[in-house]
Image 1 (cartoon, rainbow, N blue to C red):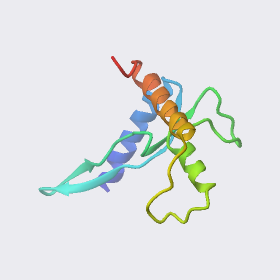
Image 2 (image 1 turned 120 degrees about the horizontal axis):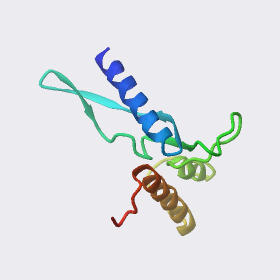
Image 3 (image 1 turned 180 degrees about the vertical axis):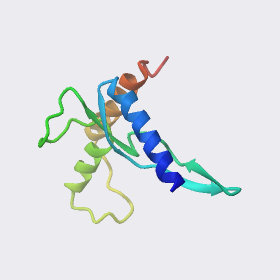
Image 4 (image 1 turned 90 degrees about the vertical axis):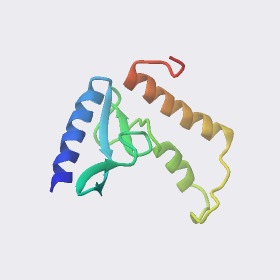
Length: 117
């Protein structure tokens, strides 16, 4: 039950933080483990790979949200004739560029900094 309490606290705090920066935290994944008998948070936390960030400004219930996470890449890959057996297909430069732009924009809006700062 401890990990559930921690998860809810992290989600609520992150959601409030992101709301002030123009995002909806629609979901996230938190992973926990044990270390010397203590519950600890492991793996990445609140990244575009483990969370879904939606634009609060453009969000309309019932419509596809503008996202700043890996969903764009997932949508592209799901449209391919690929059975998900490695190796993954090569990505066209335009897909890499659009994915990078979404991640970079999320970083800049969340942190208030440019990547080179």
